[in-house]
Image (cartoon, rainbow, N blue to C red):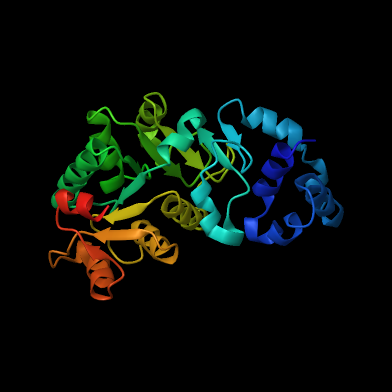
Length: 274
């Protein structure tokens, strides 16, 4: 058994932190067999790593750290570094993640927010950076669409399996990203549904894949703000559009007041700071 199948099996059942210590001492196949023996439920014994991997890879590729496409920046996650990534468009993953800039913000974005997302994404893409975001409504989807209008490939990070978009209504957007030179990435195998924990883990992944995060507008306690906070924890450059006093940008205002983010009023300033 090669490393790919047992790593996929481990990642389907455990968080990276739960197996990191064992993987430092044993091969992935050995760690999987240890976990099978310790599982009193018998659930893991019924799981067939090679068969499950073969079936899942009909729709996407499971990329592991020994692959040339693996993004080296993920090492910054330490014990939380993924055991592997599920990827559509994996051939370009290394290229797309060499200079990735996340553009994110509210799902229920203001008109000003979506206008700013378009402007920032267009400028970032024209400068040769990869625009990265989730597929969420509002700022993120707008960023993907604006970069695509420039003929630029983008990177999407999903909190569920890549067999479906999240949200489902953005299936055409996911298709256009992966069929026009871009890539979609997930921590989770096909068939996995989104959850709160998966949204949080995906926010950290999105930040880790980036060289910088641009926060267009964000309410407190949102996924966009979690991405910004993950960027802070990972020492990524965090740029925030100054708040206009409205509640929709309260997250931006707080991060700027606390000096966790650099003020970035316009796309030209973003390029200077990048």
